[in-house]
Amino acid sequence: MTSVQRILPYTKRLVMYALYDVLDSGESEYDKTESGRIDAAVTVYGNRSGFTLSVSQQPPVTILTVEISDPYKNLSRQG
Image (cartoon, rainbow, N blue to C red; front, side, top):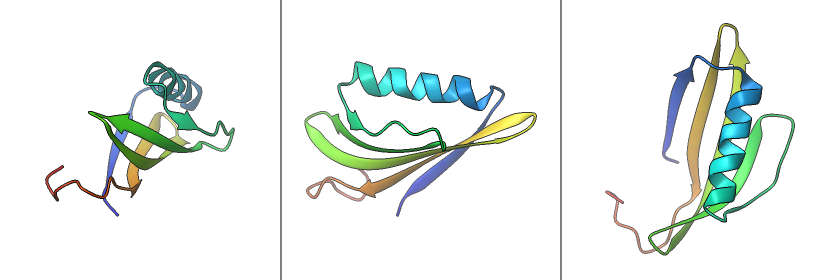
C-alpha cells in the first residue's frame, strides 16, 4: 500500500481535531477513535478511495501517517 509520513510540531489532540475538520468539510465517511487511527472513505474529483490515517505522539512531535487502503479502481499509478 502507498503511504506517506509527516512529523508535525503539534500535539496529537490538535492533529486529530484538524483531521476531523478536513474530513467533515469534505463530507467523508469515517469512524472517530481515541486511539489515533481513522479509517475513512474520501471522494476527490468524483473518485472514492479508502484511507487509513494514523496519529502517534512522540514528544516533542506528532507523527501523521496517511495510507491508501482502498484505491479507486480506475486510477492510474500516478493518480
